[in-house]
Amino acid sequence: MDTIFSAKAWATVWQYRATFLNGLLNTLESAVVGLVIAMIIGFAIGLMATSGKRWMQVVARVYVEFFQNTPLILQVCFLYYALAYSGVRITVVVIGFVSLGLYHGAYVGEVVRAGIQSIPAGQFDAARSQGFGYAETMRAIILPQTVKIILPPMVNQVVALIKNTSCLYIIGGADLIATTYNFVTGESTGGAYGPAYLVGGLLFFLVCYPLSMMAGRWERRLKERDRQVVTAIEEQEGGDAA
Image (cartoon, rainbow, N blue to C red; front, side, top):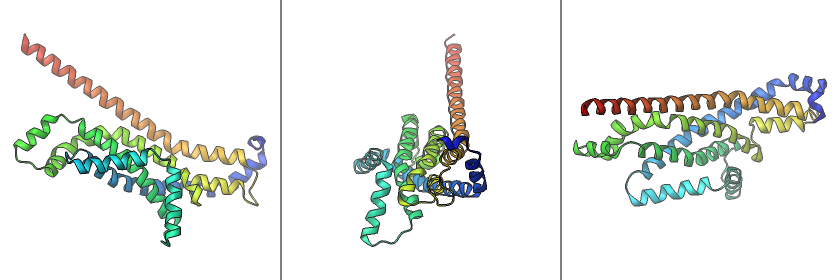
């Protein structure tokens, strides 16, 4: 790690700064596409888990338990080699998108499930009494309320997804970690280990830290709003009793 204090190493990193920025852009691209896939899968899993139909709940539970209890890097390797040996030709980039989406879809599904189940059961009963079906109840009543509840944990999932793009280097992806590794082992750029990894870590931090702060701020606001609602209800009940 002596290269941390090497002016030559830092100069090399600065000279190839566009390489790191390109790796960051590839990481963000993987994160965005993976997030879209995770959202689609996650909402489907969350709705299945709260559908009240046994077979849907079992499928949702099996999916969640499998993907949450096996490492992402193992899933990436399995998908990569399984497709390669089966003769299916898919680019590494697409494999990365799908792997991230499948893995985080399980976590998003749990967030959605918890959000739906946090809505008072009386609202479901009231919707049924008005003739609403399950789909209409979810679309018009439950999901609009669920969204604001699940926003903070959903942002945390985005942060986790961005960091987990680092697993894609194992299959030769072009993410920030892979770019950094190729830089420090390159024939003309090798040796600048300290500065290169510090810059890579700093770029991750600059993206993830603001999102983490945003999630924390939203969560505090929701808790404060809930406290205000509870206080208002208690005051109203106290006034009625008087």
